[in-house]
Image (cartoon, rainbow, N blue to C red; front, side, top):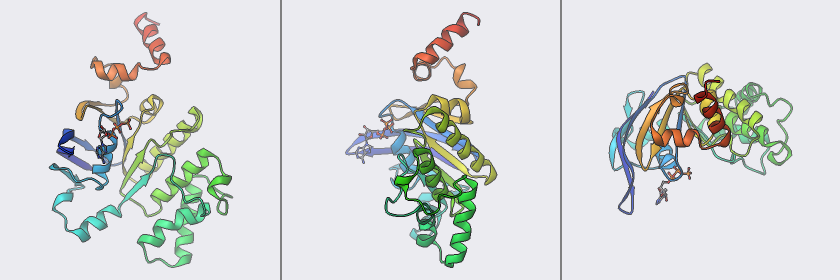
Amino acid sequence: MIEVNDIHKAFHGEEILKGITTTFHRGKTNLIIGTSGSGKTVFLKCLLGLFTPEKGTISYDGENYSELDEEEKRRLRQRMGMVFQGSALFDSMTVEENIMFPLKMFTRQKKSEMMDRANEVIDRVNLENANKKLPSEISGGMQKRVAIARAIVTRPKYLFCDEPNSGLDPNTAMVIDNLIQEITVENDITTVINTHDMNSVMEIGEKIIFLKKGFLEWEGDKTQIFKTDNEAVTNFVYSSNLFKKVRKAQLQGF
Ligand SMILES: Nc1ncnc2c1ncn2[C@@H]1O[C@H](COP(=O)(O)OP(=O)(O)OP(=O)(O)O)[C@@H](O)[C@H]1O
């Protein structure tokens, strides 16, 4: 569980996050949505410990990050996995080498142990037969699976994903969303996903927070989001023509 209490973050005197308070639970896919420039990425970077809020606290299963010493912070960060936008794989490394990279960096396991663990996650994300391929030799969806496998290979307690399905076709995006959700449940991970994608909201939005101009404007789940009368949220939800048509049909009683 991650508990965020009244965090504020400013750059050059301009406040970007203006007092965010929320809780993200274990075994759940938690989504951050909001308009462009509302502070989603800054918030995600605060959760990752990459930005330090000027005010407020972030606690990870009861451990208040700002009260930890450097060694404890390092250990906590090692319990975090990250899926970057665009996958961010190492081009010159094979699938297997990409996935083993965090184990080489952060553990002292023997090569055979690393290989066993890498193969375990390769199987889990259904990447069999791709071990020796380079990222350029596999599809965007497969690259995303590699990025997920690399993020979970160290058995993180917290998983952060920045636009995990950007650039994927809708079907592949849904498969990737479902994979992230399954892995979250199986490993009891606290997963936080930054997304623009309404399909993700509908598919895996177990907890959704909506940011607007640095404030937490609304929070709820994938059912509640279609019932809210918060104008900013409905503008976001019904920004696509398809959803506008669905809403019109709903209002006409279909
Ligand atoms: N390192 C930084 N230094 C100064 N300003 C920053 C920095 N990072 C972000 N900002 C500013 O913070 C604001 C929010 O940016 P952020 O990237 O969090 O928005 P976002 O909600 O993720 O937007 P988008 O959906 O377009 O990615 C922007 O005005 C941005 O310029």
